[in-house]
Image (tube, rainbow, N blue to C red; front, side):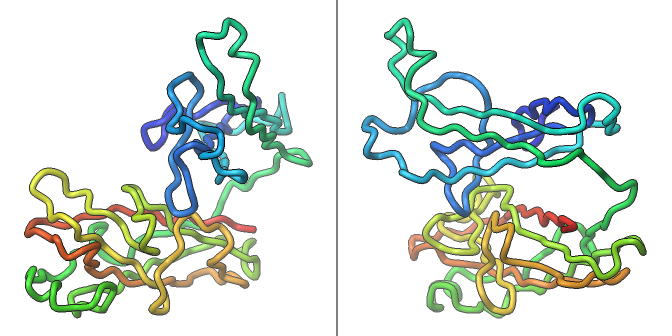
Length: 252
């Protein structure tokens, strides 16, 4: 099975897989899915590697869950750097080791909360002229943005429970600009124009699994945020602007 174009690995529990981030290319706000294998590193000196790399792992439902066999998850993920010309390189150069595991037997619900967009699945912003965007300060509200409303429905058994949600860009977030998604319109798309997402007028934090919560769930509740054009730098060109986002929810 693959997700986001990358493989999902077994955990030992039927129906539950795992993915993890690549510590060499991921950072806060830019999560790159990792995979097993061997390839050149983006660094040529050990000093260039972050002392505390950004790492995350997440479980993926791959099919019907069956805990009649294994009931716990215990996975080892190791990153190594070494010269492949050395015959023993596969056993050298361990730089980061992590052990995602559960401390108790896996339990799961037959029903969980669902999240959906209120209205069409594609949100269209009003058109904006290049000259109008250039006339604004970077990050300023353009007047062409739109509020996005999402609805969360939950089964009765989860009323009063806490829910966490977070924002995952499907393209690549712009590292220096919080809350900004790069244009994924492809050939012919506008250059140096992105989409900025804000909640309560503050740029959202991508891949932050602690920042956004609903302390006490009801059967039905909404969350809202806004999308607007964003000038990454003044060398902009005309063309379509497109960005893709997923919102993930987790009952605590």
